[in-house]
Image (tube, rainbow, N blue to C red):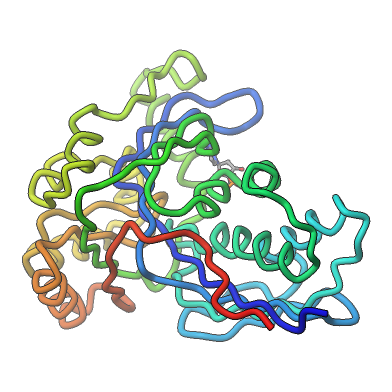
Length: 308
Ligand code: C5P
């Protein structure tokens, strides 16, 4: 019997995020370019009398250590589909910032699908796992896939994307996050008050074609001109201090800055590893963020790093 499975899983940033209208199911149509980045959580799954979640690590604060954790929900979903009891201890070594727009919770859910599938020998293939992933959340299918991808629908329809070279991203982590539903609602409110439509079908959600071309090319200077996130003005309104974080990153030499997902983490695209180090130093010294992560991506998705 398998005694323990450890899965390493990366966070992500959206190099492009264009938000369309609100659908009847409560989700927005969107068009996005996801890329994983080398900031990893590590989850260890061990058999236990009942489902239990423990959390440690630099980003552990505020992560629920109970059944409400998305990793626990993933384990329960997988177990239920196989008539099993989710009798597993999930330990999360948390490094991906929470409520930061880096899909930390979704990454842990993807890792739990992979880890519990290995622990229980349920033997699902990628397609079966990705259907479960979509039930758990809009970003979970991408977290399961890894690498980089274009995303449509509510973010669950994916087409893998290659790049000629990895990019260097530096993240400025805020001292508190922003709620994803609140940021979506604020964007709708802003559109309504400007007299713009908000319903699905009435708002186009298409990424600029230059973004996809630039991303494939691998040149960060070209990519920097194309990054887009529709949530940026909304997040700056909800959290005006993000403007100072942005300034600090740019002053430290970032090619450009961009809100990560729905925030409140801010992502900076740097010119190579040297540039990334300089941006990180400048941000740390600026006092405009709680912590800094230096990464590169795309990187592969969840991988089993220990199995015995
Ligand atoms: O899918 P997920 O659980 O991550 O979504 C959390 C919330 O974010 C949804 O309940 C919805 O309010 C909002 N959302 C959205 N449109 C999307 C994805 C998320 O409105 N495409």
